[in-house]
Every structure is written in structure tokens, then in C-alpha cells.
Amino acid sequence: MPETRRALLRRLAVGQAEGRAPSMMGAVVRGGRTVWTGARTSVEGEVPHGDVQYRIGSITKTFVAVMVMRLRDEGMLRLEDPIGTYLEDAPLPTVTVAQLLSHSSGLTAEPRGPWWERTEGGLRPEPADLFGERPQRLPAGRRHHYSNPGYALLGALVERLRGGEPWGEVLRREVCEPLGLRRTTLQPAMPHAGGWAVHPWADALLPEPAHDTGLMGPAGQLWSTLEDLCRWAHFLLRGDERVLSESSLAEMRAPAVPPEGGGWEAGYGLGLQLVRTSGRGERGDGGAGRRLAGHTGSMPGFLASLWVDVEEDLAGIALANCTSGPAISAVATDLLEIVADREPRIPEPWRPLSGPLDHDLLALTGPWYWGANPFALRLTAERGLTLSPLSGTGRGSRFRAEADGTWTGLDGYYAGETLRVVRTEDGAADHLDLGTFVFTRGPYEPAGPVPGGVDAEGWRV
Image 1: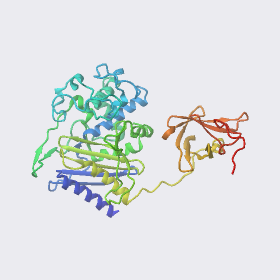
Image 2: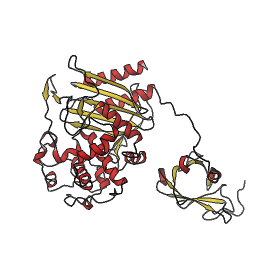
Image 3: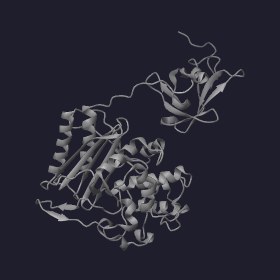
Image 4: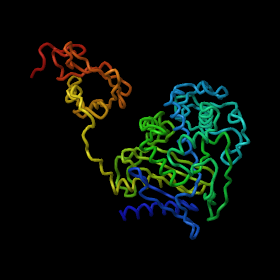
């Protein structure tokens, strides 16, 4: 709506003006398409467009993580495998692939030597040149500790398992081409923005260098455009079977380590940063907040931020060509929240299940009781089940049907646990066994298989 478009443009304009950015671009993606874009610039008559490249810094890590997850889904690695299984020269061979993805390996935050983002990658020609005498600063798996060299190892892992093909070529062939990301590259290609530093105490500019970071490339080398990042945001929201399934992306969005700092406002999944917003948006009217996944990025001369809200099927993106100043993450999240607050998502129409109805499964639905606590079991698509507490307390979960007639929990307390239907000799459903918890058709039925038995006199007043 016009009011929403004006609010978005104002937020971008405030971000560019207060952050003193030579240029800033923003976009909102919803329902699989780009619904708004905007740009502001300090150069008269040269407003950037969606095909102009900006450096995206650590958003590169999301691309590397997707390549690693592809290898996992193909059976070429396991996330719990030590990196030394695949890289003999890894400085700490015992840390796992998952720990590298989630920045919980305890590896040093930065490579040794001069500031890697502003120097040529040729200063570190070999993997051993990335690490000093103490490559590990914290115990593995205990806490989140951001590690740029850790992603250099993941890039090397991709190259090793793809037969020595450079990670950038693997990215182009396996990810960028299928998704139509024709302007996401390791090196800048015209048209591209120039990177600038802005003097802290004067409105003056200084050009920033843009070096090839070599082995550190998987940590932040990529250049991209607003148009390509909108496509990437759509992929992170919904997946694409040609690249990575929606279920694997959901796994990447799940918290993998304790959050940074003292609160629970930010965490990290498998290659994705996780944040919970205040929910205020532009209006400042409070709210429960939103759970977002994505990444920020910074390289000398550039800032970038991309956040997605799966529940709203919504993404916000912001790019700027300056080293510091703009609160780029806040701009991107506010763009998303302005749309979510002013134009809430309209739910998809309800539709019945497709295909023939399994009446045996239908007979399992309805109320079940764990002791005296009531639950409802519902049938979902692809023979799935959902267990929900009816009393306001209790543990619920979604379940995926397995070939052996059982179901596996997908979330909550029962994630990974097995749900079985225990039947009588004549085949009737007697009770549910969920990781040893017994659910019966009535509350503490005297004849039911309740662990510990039921008082012979039953319920009384």
C-alpha cells in the first residue's frame, strides 16, 4: 500500500542519512517475489539499481553452509564427523563439521598475520598459514565463538569432497546457476559499487581496497546484487530441491549452540545467525517479537544484512558501501517488520488432504491421554501426525511417518523420538507408546497399560 511504501522509503532514507552512507539499497521479499526495493545515494543523478554489485562479507558463509549441507544430504559426510576425517592438515582435526558450521569449534576468531580483510590472500598461501601456535582458544562444543578461519576450513572441505574443484566453481555450478544468481561472484564485475570509509568527524571519504582474500574467501569474499540476494532470501525461506530441501534449511535455522551474551536474543544455527526482534517495527507499539534467520556481512567499504521470517514468509535486505556507520542490520529487520506490522500475512486457504484417505490412520485421531492430561492427535499431509496438549500444559510435537509403520518426532521434547501404535491381538489400536510414555484413550483407564498400574477403585468423588 502507498503508506507502507512511504514508510519503507523513509526507513531506508533515515538509515542512509544518519549512517552517512555513500549509498544504501534495501528490498523486501514476500510470497516468493520482491515486493519493494529502494535506493538512496549521495551522488546526484546516480541512484544505484538492483543489478549493481556490493560486497556482502559474511553472508558468504550462508552459501558455504548450503554447499556443506548438500554434501551431507548426498551422504558424503556426516555433521558429527571430525574435520580431520577429510582434511589431514586441519590444525585441530578433532573439531566436527557441525561445530565449524555453528562457530562452536573454539577456533581462533581471526587468521594470523595482518588484517585479512584488507590484505592480499597471497600472504597466507597454505592452510597452515591461517593459524598460529594456538589455533584453539576455547573448548570445542561448549560455547559460541565466531571463527572466520573455521569457514576457510569448510571451503577447503567442499573442495576436497568435490575432487579438488575450487569452492567458488562448486558454488557457481551447484547453487548460483540453478537459482539464477548470475551476478553473485568471487570478484567484482561491472557495474559494482566502490567501497568507502567515512571520516568519523567530517563528511569526508576515503576509498577502501578490495583484495582477493585467497584461502579466507569462504569467510567473506562474495560480491552480489540486490536482485540476487532477493532470490537467495526466497531460497532460504522455502528451499529448492535442485539445491537444498526445505527440511535441511529448517535444520540450518535451528539453534545449534548457546546464544551469545547473557540473553536469548541472538544465537547461531548451521551457517545462519538467529535473532529475536523486539517486535516493535517502525511503530514502536511493542509485541512478542519475531524469530529471524539470516546473516550480516562487513568487508572494508561495505555492509550487508539479510534476514528472513519463515512464519511471515518475509525477508528484509539492506546493502551499503561504507565500512562503518549505518546500523545495517537494524535497517534490514525494520524493513521486514514495517511490512509485517502494516500488512500482516494473509493465510493460505485451507485445503483438505490430497490423495486417498487412510481410514486406519483417521481412526487414530482425536483425544488421547497421558495419565490425566488430555492431548489431541491430528492427521497431516504425507501420513504425518501432530500431537497437541489440550489443557494448556504438556509437550507437543509433529511426527514424520516412517516406512516401518512408526513415526519420528520432528520438534520439541520428542524430536528424534519414536511414536508407535501398540495394537491388540485382533489389530485394534490399544495405546500409543512415545519414547516409553503411554497414551491411552481415557484418563488412567483401569484396564489400560498404565505404568505403575491404576487404583482398582478408579476415579472417585
